[in-house]
Amino acid sequence: LDFALFPPDLDIVAIDFSPRMVEQAKLKAAQYPGHLEVVEANVEELEFPDESFDTVVTSCTFCSVPDPVQGLKEAHRILRPDGQMLMFEHVRPGNFLLGAMMDVMTPIVRKTGPELNRPTADNLRRAGFRITREFNVYLDMVKLFEAAK
Image (cartoon, rainbow, N blue to C red; front, side):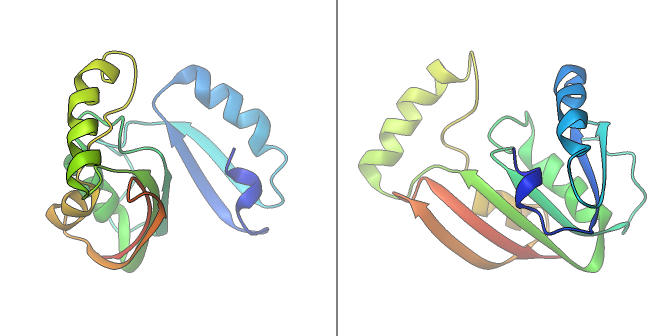
């Protein structure tokens, strides 16, 4: 769904671990006014060479990655030294009541979907990133992150 939001004329590689989603994404990628390749890959074990990308962009991704720090370390590894990480993610809110509610809901939701209470800012730092901007989109639960390698 995000392909239409990228500026035209970029050289993009999109990944998904699901063969079915890759096939669906390839149909949408054909409409992108630039080069957009879709490949099946696991973010925890990327086969791309070190320092091969300028930017990594995620959209509601790291709530579903089994080991988010390992996935972020891989993103860090494939970024060039001046690379940037751009993320749109839902996270564990800092508000005590909302955070506790997400902690209670996560074991239930985890069986069929994402983890609602990921500490994404901490995970970025543990993976070696420096957060340059953190923007609350909704109730401290949906955030935009910009991070530098």
